[in-house]
Image (cartoon, rainbow, N blue to C red; front, side, top):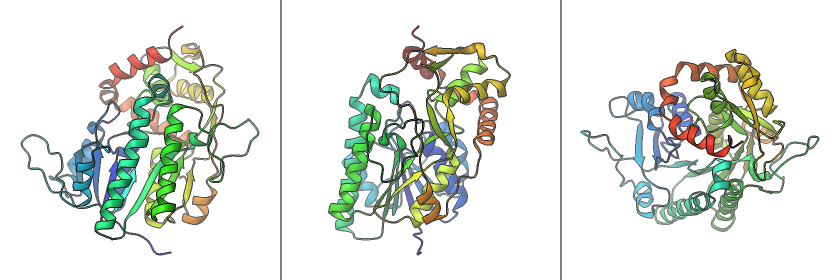
Length: 368
């Protein structure tokens, strides 16, 4: 198999949890590639998560990291990026460098929190579907004007498949899509757009669908960091319904390694499921966090279930394991211990986002 070796990788949503970890992973593991992080910096985008990357790989380092604050729905900015006419967003007092034209794209920019999609679906439709369409059109127009090799990886979610019963086999890439939340419906919509562009326009895209990510720098509205940060403050830990919902967990760095394999060696038009082979009940995850922190289970508060809450996710990752020789490197127990240690050691990072996270948690969960 001939490997694709990009010179400049565009990561949309690169200041988010998965995006920031992926940017860091790529720059660490491939010394020949430059990375452009394009992010509009919503509440979940945090450049502080990339302070070490900017120091080592920004203009004062080896110069391989660029940041552009921009919206994927901004047609003019996207055209400038792909024509090699964009300049990075530089800190005050610094000169904005020109950004090289990308020859690979990993598209992560999205509204991603299910509970927020229930409270306000419109922004999910606008960002996840219209934003993806705008990006696809910008790249297609650029390739028509300047044909060249380019690869596009659309990062999706296992939630587009819907829910599984307790004895159902894991989702495969051939499982019909049956999204049950506004969030997953918009991700399924964007998946279908990407597929249509491959089939209609021979667009050089691939789709990945991953299971639940965890690891450092995750915004504390998601299950694991929410439980860790609340337990560290001896606050109530909200658990939906009976806590028996099952998720497959993958460490964010394992996910990043899978994405890079897809960029370099994936087959155009393919879908790749990416899972961690770690199915866990939510309540068991919460108990593991409490045990690791030496906190009592009396902190657990069962709260009313959210509408349309999928009972179980599990993905079959045999395609990417077989075709691209990828394997998750961390067990869930080891990865969770590392993650808990990171949050304990980086209280200053998560303290600065808690006002938003806890206000959201209170309004979403702790209503009884």
